[in-house]
Image (cartoon, each protein chain N blue to C red):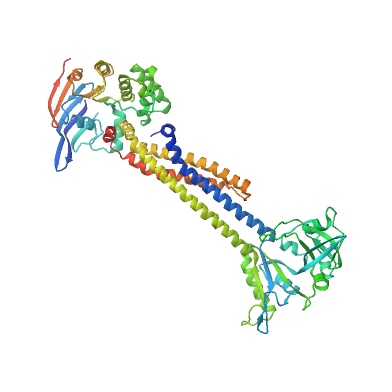
Length: 229
Length: 409
């Protein structure tokens, strides 16, 4: 069964008098366990696509099924629950809470889930361990390198055992060497943990790690190809 | 379901980062709560002092005085006519249902002598009901008895000031003193009452049987009359009814036609003093209300800072929303933050208010009364202020769009 299924997905913005079609009748399916890179120039609609499938934004029209659930008509709080349960986010700017330790950052999604309070620390520690950051758990983000910060963010995305990981330019703020490390980590997570990954990037070097590449232009999918590394 | 302990932890951390700002925000609440507590303590202390003084004069007290009269076009002052008698006092006691007891009073100034000491004071001819009417107890000896009143026995009861001035350390009981050269035997000594509300020494007094006063001390143009009648009503609620009943009865007894004015005056002493007490209580509440306004202003300060805080932490709000925080979670976090601010401020304010009140009583000698009620009230109110003024910023935060919030620099 498809983890992500969109049907004629549309997103329109009104800018002054004109209407911008950020997403123009996008229909696609992403199966469980896939590793997809979404590419396209800026303004192509790839970020809007990510926001909509990440349940951060609601489509203007069309249908979106996530894990078999129709989320296109859901309200704010229901979407928040879906995000908490099914989606892990990794951002370009890491987006960690600055005054909070690595461990507590990883714990944040658990605060809003149904997890039992005393299990939280253990779960967060396990997630950090998986990413080799066990010794850094009590460090604050500003005491960590960019690569380490991004790994904390990935641990946070994984802590709730979400089946879908969405990464928006995750290597945009990292040097080449660290970028490759992070991408290898994604590949590992995809292969070993069977986590579905959707990644937005405009760098071919990065998209090369994925198994499928979707290209956007003017809100439409212009190509959707298998990628053999 | 967000859990409260971790939210409190998050809030405390956020407040600690901006120590100075948090402290200044709390200051409004601190001053407000402290002011409310101090004002209520001072106000309640004052009204308590007044009620204590009312109690020393005697509770539920009414005084009946003779009225004025006009002689050849000249109106004389109150008490000019001699038309109140012991019989009037007895009639009021027996016939007015709202009256508990009465006592006649015939008083005057006199020089009194004991051994080689002498002293000028007020001598009151009265009867055994006096101590009841004035809620007075005897420190030593005994009260008059009925026999002594009827037979005009030359006995007297002394106030503490008289004892101090005439007897020093001697026991005055059974000693003889001379009042206006008439020898009297001391049978009792009154408990000290201290100053009255007007600053009079209430202990500078001698009681003698009213019959003796009439016969031997203060001659009257109309024999058998007294200067005033003191009346004790059954309860505070019955004061007004007692007053009406006394007026009706005396008009009847003095055979006044409906067109004639009263030939006596009824003064409700307790009511007057209760009005003073009421006034001081209203004053205290007014002061507390003004202090309450500063609490409100403190609340606006909290709202202001919370709005700044929400804007500053837009990105944090975005992150929390992205990982699954619902509107309710965000709202709770900021309300708890405002609540912590106001409650810590409230707590400091309570302590400061108590301290200020104690200092006032210590250095300025003011009577204060800190009630649990005022502490609970002001502390509770500061909590409400926190929730009320924290709500709008929290609500604003919870309505943020996660995408915009995440992009916020």
